[in-house]
Image (cartoon, rainbow, N blue to C red; front, side):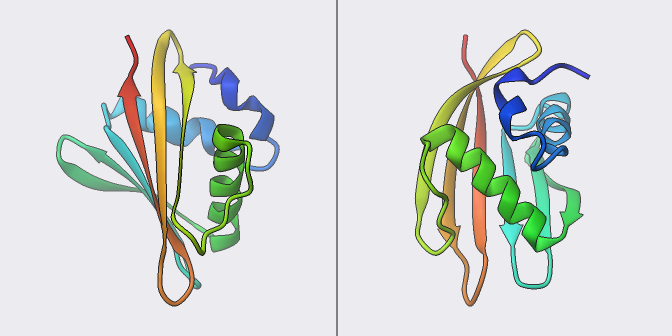
Length: 121
């Protein structure tokens, strides 16, 4: 597996982070979708115009994942009750990506987040 160094600061909170990004890169995905609801949370990858379920996590785990990513990207607190966005540069192996985050609250509780993976040449 490629080393994903920029996100190593959040690894103790969510060790699956490297795996999600590596799976997205391996699938030539353009987006990662996170959906958190009261009863479960789903991570999906969009590759070749097909939305594939990557994992189902406990909702608190996905909330921590989103919080860690947002804090790394925006250096601010993630608040799932309001729309938020952020961007940061990140390397997966030798490839540099711009990761663009956009989140929206979901009724009655939860959030949806889209992460765009843009190759930065």
